[in-house]
Image (cartoon, rainbow, N blue to C red; front, side, top):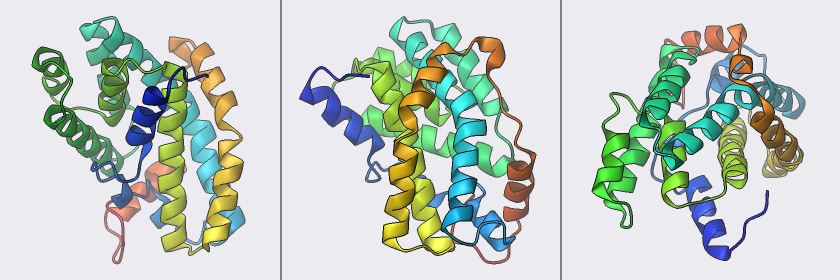
Length: 229
């Protein structure tokens, strides 16, 4: 889990930053619909919702897929990168959530194209994907900048958690201190999740989240909403 130099830490902070112009702030991943349905209504129910998504979706799908994508890009296994990108897209629970990862993946790929330091030939393997899932673009940046995989996964998960908590602050609503309590507790879980993700076999990857799928589908036609998903 260690980071050997300050430069790597800065790059990971940049990838995890809410200032990264990929539109992550505009998505709640079903949380807004859960608030509308009364499932999430206070700090405890928000904690249950976010931690359930973390445990039963991200920990066993996003996390191991991201590690495999990092390895594929790093070893120039482009066929493997395509395969894991396609698997991740197929795993999304609703049209909204699928559109979210494609929009964020496209935005990060475009940002990487505009930044200096990555060869155009390398970028072509990413931008040549028909649809770019966000983990594929994130993993590409990690591999291109030669960042350590485990800390990179921690940064990915932290960024997701921070966006979920910010969505809860706006929709439940929660106070800033409650938000920090949630993040403090979630942060304590990430090391174990990263360790487990590294041990999962290919056949163990995948989630079943019917409530998320139903609520996200309802959100598509929700009358009043702040978030795109």
